[in-house]
Image (cartoon, rainbow, N blue to C red; front, side, top):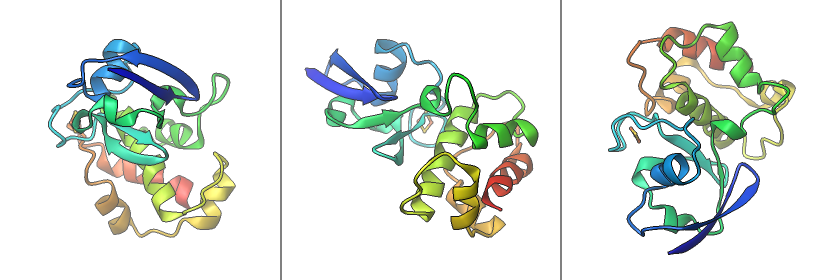
Amino acid sequence: MKTTITVNGQARALDLDPRTTLLDALREELDLKGTKKGCDHGQCGACTVLVNGVRINSCLSLAVMHDGDAVTTIEGVGTPDALHPIQQAFLKEDAFQCGYCTPGQICSTLGMLKEVADNWPSQATEDLAAKIELTDAEIRERMSGNLCRCSAYPQILAAIRSVAE
Ligand code: FES
């Protein structure tokens, strides 16, 4: 089935088996391996991407449903020359061990911050600081769909907190 998805700002024309998940289309058809397959059942959050700015588990969504949508994967976060402030915060706070869940954690953080600040306009840290007022408990709740088998949760929380302060 012919499907065109804008992935990280670039229109990608695909001819897909209608049963292909968005996750498999990204990884296998477009060779974007940054989005990880953990459970493949919507339980771990490793496959989180942004669709039109909204975070979803890409393993639970058929790619053909996203004809015309804009998808952002971890490869589209930040620029070739500079990490996104959230990526910098994860590095600074050592918010990972194996790193397998990190792309999903970061995409989910972006989606969460956008949920909180409706018109979150850019990647500038000061924009986040101006708009985000979340308690640690709220951040934990909003990030509860993203599991980390290494249990780096305190550091992940610290990283998110550092861009939300
Ligand atoms: Fe999609 Fe686990 S791989 S939620």
